[in-house]
Amino acid sequence: MSLVPLRDDLVPFLKSYLPSNEEQRPGLKPFVTLTYAQSMDSRISKGKGVRTVISHLETKTMTHYLRFHHDGILIGVGTALADDPGLNCKWSPVDKIADMQCSPRPIILDPQCKWRYEGSKLQELAAQNLGKPPVVVVNKLPAWTTKAKAVTYVEAPVGPDGKFDWLPLFLLLKRQFQLNSIMVEGGAVVINELLSRPDIVDSIIVTIGAKYLGIQGVEVSPPAGEIEMDDVAWWKGSKDAVVAARLHRT
Ligand SMILES: NC(=O)C1=CN([C@@H]2O[C@H](COP(=O)(O)OP(=O)(O)OC[C@H]3O[C@@H](n4cnc5c(N)ncnc54)[C@H](OP(=O)(O)O)[C@@H]3O)[C@@H](O)[C@H]2O)C=CC1
Ligand SMILES: Nc1nc(O)c(N)c(N[C@@H]2O[C@H](COP(=O)(O)O)[C@@H](O)[C@H]2O)n1
Image 1 (cartoon, rainbow, N blue to C red):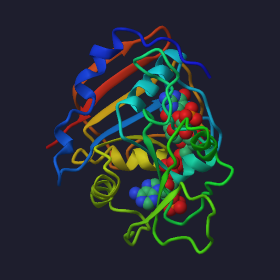
Image 2 (image 1 turned 90 degrees about the vertical axis):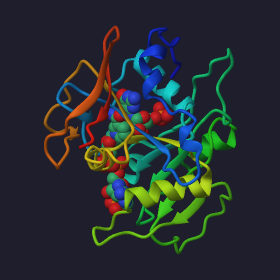
Image 3 (image 1 turned 60 degrees about the horizontal axis):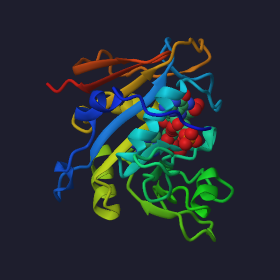
Image 4 (image 1 turned 180 degrees about the horizontal axis):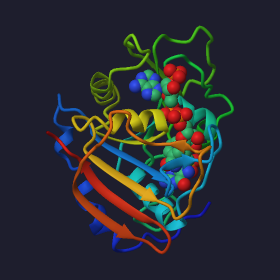
């Protein structure tokens, strides 16, 4: 997939929703951007395990611009298994192909060690210096060993629900891997949990694609119920719209 030039008006539109230097202060959590693409009927894919194009190239380019501006990019293992994503950055302010240097560090939440680095797109890109190798957050280090030296496994405790606690997780990622800003791309389990965490999420940037994906699609909708948004701004592309906002803090 080749990107298109970034539309000029996206830069001022996104400016106040991007990380600043503030979060480099030790002890503070990283800046967290929750960003994904959804259909008109609030679906992020056609079905579980089905990689689905929602964004127009214009907004896919925006996603790569966002990747350029973050140190880390986080997904749940459901997305890693369904999409085998690249998670690198193909956008660059100078006229060259973006590479490993300007790509964010992929982070996969995989408490039960279901995902394998060997044979993945992430491994392929890292081998070509086109992306960084990932950090995989597990509950217990896997019993099997990996020959791939590049991938880093890190252990974190889970609660009774089998989940990592978000704040300690983000603090660990900053402390151990110097990730001052992290964009969260999905999937639904991760998004739905973070939609009710204004204490964690600093910005939310959602692409709305002009299509319906239907009842079989993977839906995003917060189980916690109604969520209010603040500082809301809209951008209109040739096909998609983008809403940037902050989750309301009480
Ligand atoms: N349109 C878009 O922008 C995007 C679309 N997608 C789509 O989303 C779909 C995948 O979504 P989904 O299946 O919900 O998967 P997720 O990517 O949200 O992964 C869910 C799994 O990740 C692990 N996980 C998530 N949160 C935590 C936590 N706090 N602590 C520990 N483990 C955690 C759990 O693994 P375990 O079950 O092992 O405990 C959980 O079941 C795919 O179809 C993909 O295409 C994904 C990203 C963006
Ligand atoms: N912005 C956006 N638009 C879509 O239409 C999408 N399907 C996604 N998906 C996310 O991007 C990942 C794929 O990334 P690569 O192109 O392989 O680098 C996918 O796993 C989702 O996180 N995003």
